[in-house]
Image (cartoon, rainbow over the protein chains, first blue to last red):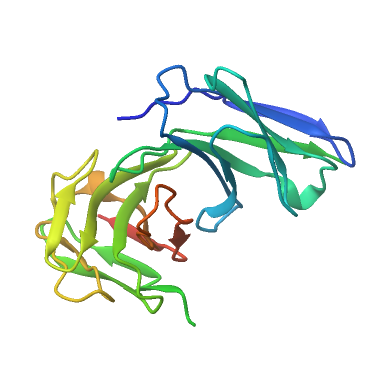
Length: 108
Length: 116
């Protein structure tokens, strides 16, 4: 199974950028990196994904290290509504495994 | 589209009782899966299916059965409920494109199960 490592929790001030790290040292050449987030009392929702190049969408940016053994999810301007658990996942095979994720606290 | 729907939203069972958690999707997705989430924990994969008639075990399959007779439905059965199965259960689905990239997973709202 594809493994990722994330910090248990992080804090950030409102309206400041947030960088959420993820280590995936066992990543293979065809593994896509996906990020999901889970708001309180809801199911997870997709945030962003990438393979090698950095990616941007309306929700966030994904920065992927050159060796692909780590990645960073960037929320450019955090709001209180971004408080959630963020999961970094390697999409490798039919078993889509979630870790414990990072619980992001946003301070007003 | 309704997306991924789950019923019931909440259920209380006594130890030893059986029940089926329902999951349906109307997006013609081939891949469906079940996760459980315990308090303060991440999601753990129970069973998954890559298409009608095909199912396989995830990380924590013991105590649960699944079947996939149609593309739309993927029910999860608890044959003899135990207190350790108290959890929130999420169903998810995604398409399986022919390319390398799998599309995003769409999750249902969850079923909260309490086993006494």
